[in-house]
View (cartoon, rainbow, N blue to C red):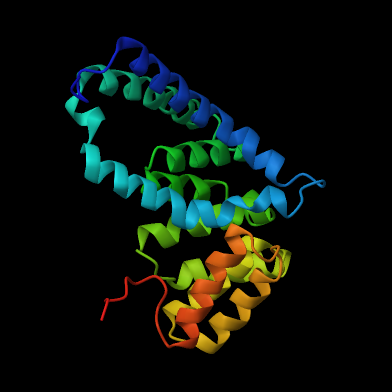
Length: 229
């Protein structure tokens, strides 16, 4: 069976998954900042930064863009977008609802609408600047938009995140990435070593950071694909 001749249940499953992800974005943000959150709860960091983009590239390379090619799948994707559009419309009459702006920003991020997510986070800036998890989510959106670069605004956001939670996993990660972006590998090594120390030896996160540190100590940018000699 051709990949475009998908069974009808697959389209509905995809729609349900997308809808659940969008609606769960708000809940996940709140749960992530709960007092009982542990290190294991935050092990999604490297999966998000490295694994998800890699998976997307692999699937696109193998399958192309099934949503664009299959009208049924496109219709289901549009259903999720409609839900987000309704939230955005509601906020036009309640612009002071900062938690709703954050939920909208998270939803845009899930849908890959990074520019819209950036703008939504900006509308909730007064609240976001007091919450490390939302602040680092906003930083990630801006870094992704700029292809790994840390402009002045992103640097100011990160400085605030450092003031709030200097030992937060994502804060350490972004401090390391900013140092790499600025060519300060010694500083990057310091932050990445601090982050690595938070993971159990032999874990996937620890091993991933080991490879990053090897490249940094060799004067290589771990974000760049190294040529095989």
